[in-house]
Length: 478
Ligand code: ADP
Image (tube, rainbow, N blue to C red; front, side, top):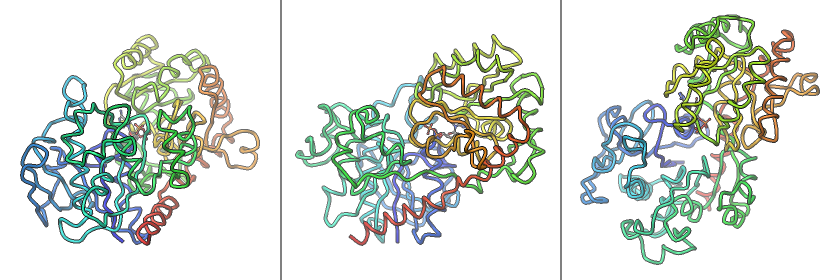
């Protein structure tokens, strides 16, 4: 069967976070299940530059205020349809933010256009139509609405929530620009708190809703974790489910990763020490093999508990550990991370920036990766850390709870622990968990088992690809 996925990011063409990894990995993961995935993306400069020759072109004159075209092509082993609309996407840098860090004023129309074009392609405007649509996050949220209000029969839609915190909420002036019938602007439709809710519309018009872990699927249906949408989600009953993310285990393989100083595997973990030394040099830390080295890679945001890491430094430094931080985001947190490094030269290092290679060196060189998120739909950092032999220390929330097995005594005795979990998400608990991880690290035989378990944990897409395929088949049959 044929599925069109509609998304605003796709690794390796354009990435700001985990969404891109998932969108980039799904086509290869679903192929063995008999699902052929085509990916629909906005024609950002980075995407346009990567495209091969188009095999089909469909002009869209006067599309959302400018001249646009749909291009069918291949790049990075992906089957793509790209919406080439220079008036919307020919802007350098981050896909969502203008220089200076503010959202582009016209993000509402930029991503409505993506969804409108996605609906047209799903129905077959470029030839054969599709059996189902897979729409990702608020940027693709209107795809279901354009299918519902367009010519019938439509195409069934699976909508996946990668993060409920990003809701794509716009003022009501957006609605007349969308070209949808007036009655779509209703509580039973796009309207959300008097404005237009793109994520809300995605949830409303989807045939099935998935999110990226079973625990997060439960959390978002509670008042505490539902961010205002829990009522709608509860109302969808059995249409909501959680399917865990995986990572592309060929793309993420410490045995072949060219970004590492030394390559290694679960059966030959020895060379890993060279990565730790390289990491210590890169961040200006004391080059000590015996000091437990914690790493953090991610957005510097409240969600990720970066402030908690900074507050837990007395525990971390008190147990003789070191810390490296790689991330961008909140300016105040960037400054605090740099301040912590300046105040603890040789023990803490910070790099502000987005650096795929350095991220991989952290996964493959740190002894443990910290993921103290306040909420986490799935989280990929801990999956990369498992795969690269850095037993993760995680908050027991969302996908972190579902993918890391706490190395408590029973788990160690049965040989199943892969990391350390803590709850509730408070600094004292994080501090205690850091001490627990360091205690494990200082018992070499135990540590070797923990590291081996982590590296052998199944973080691949295999099981989850089967679940997505079953969902698409069920909808296509119906
Ligand atoms: P998010 O909520 O940001 O999507 P995830 O853990 O799901 O968080 O995915 C984040 C992805 O982006 C991971 O692959 C991580 O390695 C990568 N990443 C995050 N920040 C950086 C950075 N500063 N440099 C390199 N890679 C990063």
